[in-house]
Image (cartoon, rainbow, N blue to C red; front, side, top):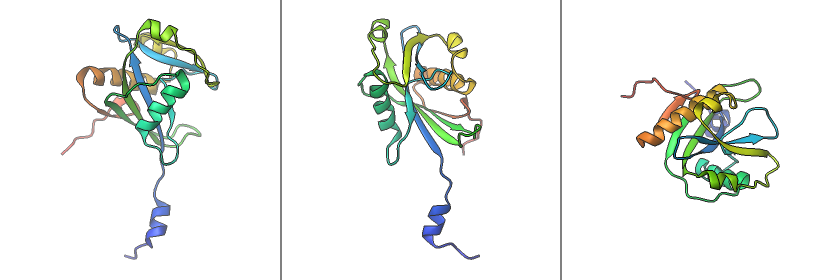
Length: 165
């Protein structure tokens, strides 16, 4: 078996898109969602990881850019494998714990980001009508992970069923 030169091998490696978001919730387990101006579905605060940027840096940067919020991130709640969806290639999504936020804090958010139309706190049931099914599953899993203090590996938002040895 002939081996490729290392530079050719490195160039042949699969590239995955990567996104990072922040789960903010209130004391009633409602989650903070953002209404974007560029697509019909709502999102949690976050976005695409830029070249040479760590996912946790992305999450904190996007939280500040989108909502003007600067706070330390908590634990990593979810790592989600996302299959190719239309024009969007396969990827990984990271969700970090942003902690609790109050209704007064949410009402005080005045986003200057042109991508953000509005923000609000929503129950899981309400969120189901606003976000994509995969994100709804990811949010649900992230809420459970926050309650349990554990990171959950997911596939399309659902806990992975892979057996670990």
